[in-house]
Image 1 (spheres, rainbow over the protein chains, first blue to last red):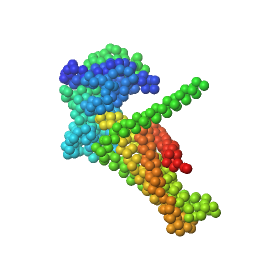
Image 2: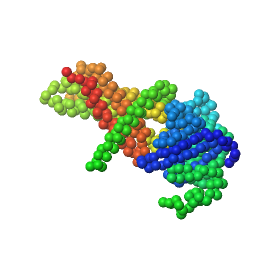
Image 3: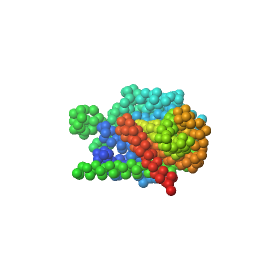
Image 4: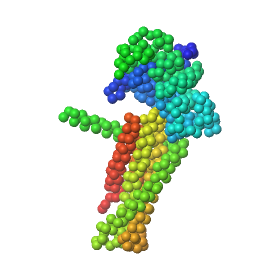
Length: 257
Length: 259
C-alpha cells in the first residue's frame, strides 16, 4: 500500500450491463480506476468479477454501457486501435492460460517476438530477466505441462509483464494455490504494482490476498458495485453483506448455497 | 405447436449464426492474408503437421482404394466390356473422384478433428483470450496458417493418392484380373487428360479449405470444458464430411458438363 495514486482517472466504466443466456451478470456497473492504484474487486464466485475484467481489456463486449481506457471508449475502436490499447495491458488469467505448445521461454517471449523488432538474443535476455523476477529463472526450456499450478501462475505473470505494461489485470491470482505460494504471488503483485505508473486491477475472493495487495477494495454484488473503499474501511464496515463476505460466514443475508 | 415453431425458429437462427460466423472468419482470414509472409514459420509448421504427417495414412488408404476400384470394376465389366477398358475406367474414377474425395474424407477425420480439438482446448483454457489480450490476432496466428496449409497440402496429398491408387489398381489388375500391365497402363494413358488431374486437385483444394476452416471455426466456438471440446471435434468431422460431399456434387456439375 502506498499513496502513489493521483486523481487522474485512467479506466472508466459506465452503466455496464452484460447477460449470458438470459442471465444478467453485470447490471449497471459504475467504476473509476485511478492511475497508479491497485484496485481489488471482491465478490462471490459467479458474481461477474472476471466478466468485468474481460470487459476492461475488450475481450467481451458490453450489452449496454461503456468502458473507456484513458478516454478512449473501447466499443468505438477498430480492431487495430483496440490492439494498440491492449499492448499497454498485461493480463494474468485464472489458470495461467499458458500456450501448451510453446515452452516457458517461448510463452514469455511471444509478445516480444510479435510486437517488437528486438533481436533473438535481446528477447532471450528479457525473458530470462522476467522469469528471474518471478522466481522461475532458468526454466526457459520446460513445457507448461511439466509445471505445478503455482509455477504456471508465475510464468503467466512473467508473460503478462513482458512488455512492461501500464495496466496489469489479475484474474484470481491466488485461487487454487497453497497459502505460501499464494503469499509469494501476492508479494509479486505488490512489487509490480509498486511502480507509480502501473495501474493494477485484481479480481479475487481471497480476503487475505485482497488486504495485502489493495490500495482500494471494491465489492461486486448482484451485478453492481456494492461498496468501494480502502481496506480499512472495508474491514470495519457494518454492512451485513460485506461483513458476512469478508469474514466468510455461512449465515447472513447472502445465501450460502 | 408453439414450442415446435420456437424450436424451428431457434434452429434457423443457430444455422444463420453458424454460417454468418463462418463468413466473418473467412473475411478476417482474407484481411490477415498479407501477414503470411511476415511469419511463414507458422504456416510451414502447419504444412508439416497437416501434410507431411498425413502421408502414411493416405498411402494406406489409397492403396486399398485403387485395389478395390480395380477389383469392383473388373467384376462389373466381366462378359460385357473388354478388359482393356479397365485402366481407363479405374484411372478416370481415381483421378477425378476417388482420390480427392477419399483423401478429403479421411483427412476430415485426421486433420479437421485435430484442429478442432486443439483450438477448442485453447478456447476453453483461455489461451485464445490470452492471445487476444496480448494483441495477437488469433485469426492471423492460429487460423490463417492452418487454412493456407490445408489448401496447399490437401491437393498434394490427393495427387499422391491418385498415383498410389492407380499403382494399387495395377497390382490387382495384373495379379487377380490377369491382364498385362501394358494393357492396363495403356488404358490409363490413352484417356488421360491433364484437365482431369487439374479438376481433381481443384476439388481437393476446395476440400482443404472446408476441412481447415470448419476445424478452426468449430474450435473457436467451443464452450463448456472437455465435453465441449469433444462435441466440437465430432461436429467438425461431421460438418466437413457433409460439406465435402455437397461441394463435390456442386463442383462436378460445374466442371464436368455433359453434352
